[in-house]
Image (cartoon, rainbow, N blue to C red; front, side, top):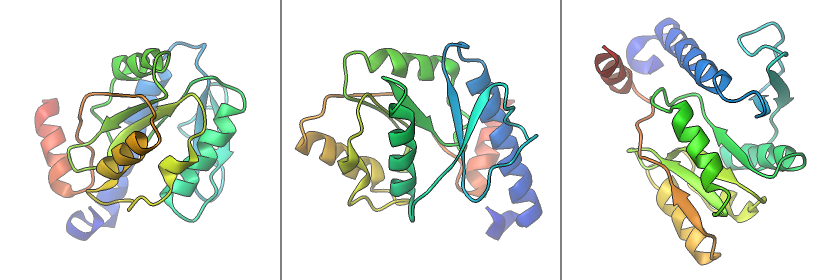
Length: 179
């Protein structure tokens, strides 16, 4: 987005997406522990209140390694874990709650995006193979992930397909739909 809208406007949109994500996740039942992972350093006194969110630092050289590490940490203390990004303003409390429910009878839940990626991934056990051999940030992520699920005989439930925000037009479309 910065390439077409400029750094300042892209940062403003990023902040708005974080706010939307925070609002949705904060609306979940208080029995659900919320972890937020930071890329470089943990920020305190920010949008993610320490009263509601457990803050962790992510590790890994690519998105797959960072997600694997996040799942590993969360699954040490929880039976069902769902991770979401902050670039999908269309995700709802209902979708997240339904995905938690679907993990009762499935190994994995996944929410695909219309650009070939996914906005949500949930599992009951760490399936490291889901983070290996994926061409991250491409239109092949969801397809490759489904192939790995099938190859390893993992039962999954697919959440509704949504759009995420990667480009200026994605944001403009979201603003039009929001009105």
